[in-house]
Image 1 (cartoon, one colour):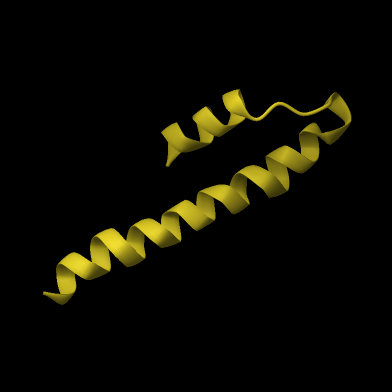
Image 2 (cartoon, rainbow, N blue to C red; image 1 turned 30 degrees about the vertical axis):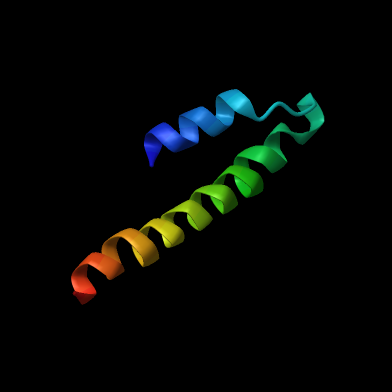
Length: 49
């Protein structure tokens, strides 16, 4: 997940006033969604067989 966070920090450009919002809300939310989808579709599907 560290690579995803680094990628999102490089790709998402915001004004300097919104940098804190990006760091504390946007990046963790996107990372959390990716993590949930990965666990649900990649890990749970392979273990359920």
